[in-house]
Image (cartoon, rainbow, N blue to C red; front, side):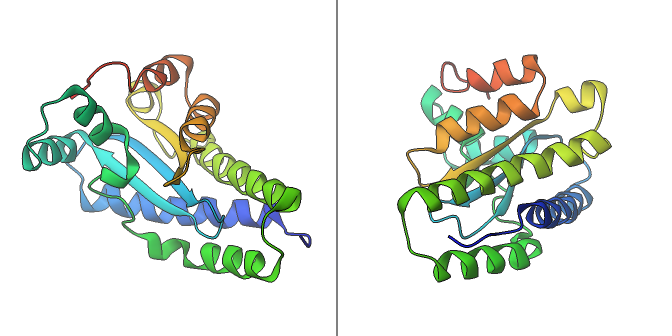
Length: 187
């Protein structure tokens, strides 16, 4: 694969995330967001936002008649199930266009693609870390109530990336709660 400017990508992702998550908060000022995430696809051609709040989760559980612990956990932590999944994804159009153009110009697969994908994942995590360091996601108890992570849609690698990113982005207590997400129901 030809060279790619991942520092610029990180900046683009950070600013798109800032815009998208700020808009979500402004649209839902009375909701308590418990998770905000960025996700990509296995082909490393997109970055999109996803978020959920305690109030939205309760609506999802009620609408889907979720009572089984596994279903509750999936509704709480599966980014594709969230009320605000893909909301404001348009803020990431330039990012996704740039990724898609680069990937489509290259030969698919191989070590070069694996390295590219890994660097994309790092750029996503680092973009959220930049915002967190600014205090964008809150401080103190407000920040401890929010879990940040990154994911890969429809991928066998999703859980490992989620765990790694959550460990890098959150306090040990928040990460421990997240790591146990499939162990017990949490509605």
